[in-house]
Image 1 (cartoon, rainbow, N blue to C red):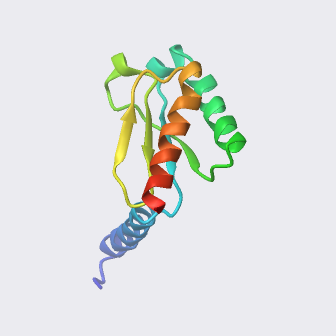
Image 2 (image 1 turned 90 degrees about the vertical axis):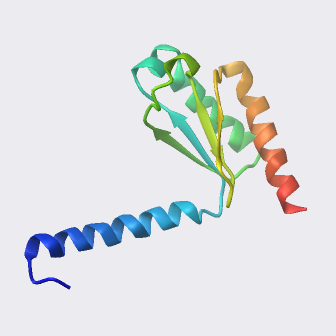
Image 3 (image 1 turned 90 degrees about the horizontal axis):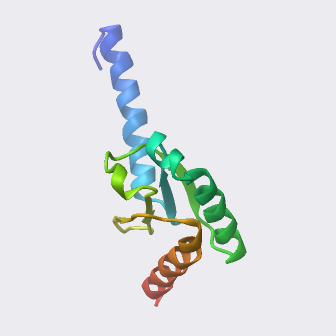
Length: 116
């Protein structure tokens, strides 16, 4: 390790960031990522977020529901990404309150199919 204090600080920060990224990549439960910015807020993302939490609980699905930033495709808002353990993120556009249950059912079915 370098004796330069700035380099040492950077190295520690990088180690923490790499450990956090590895933990995300190796998540053992599904992640539901709700894109949240001004464009999605104007379209009711707060209600969608709450509905996602409620529906996951109602269906008994242990999942992490997280707020993330906008990806810049405002015309697709509200957007929700679902990442199953070991899988890629799948983006669902135009998630409205009436589509929340369907989205969770689809994601849950994919989780069950992977468990077979």
